[in-house]
Image 1: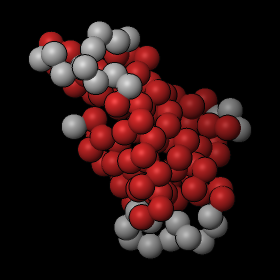
Image 2: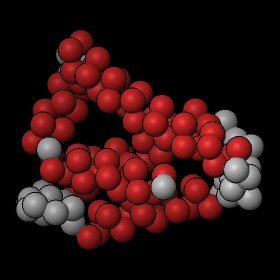
Image 3: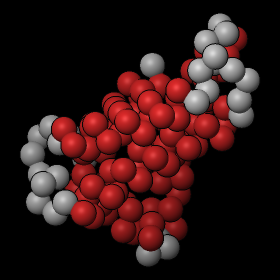
Image 4: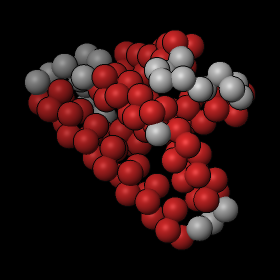
Length: 119
């Protein structure tokens, strides 16, 4: 379920990559509105994943962890992989669907993190 959220977010970012580029660049330039928009997106995504992780802990599928920290890490690795792909693969990020290379990278990273917390 967590992996699907990361993949879904990746598809959302890729589908709105021009907007994401502007948001990231403006936030890096310390524009207060862009920083607040990014913060709100980050927090909403992180909270959603934390809720799911708490449910998985209650079911005994995930060991006791700091769900807020793991949720933030999942957001950071997905956004980081997306940003890295944009910066290292100019022109290849064009197209309607998420490039397979990027989807596989996020899948690999999230699986590694999630495997470390499974019971």
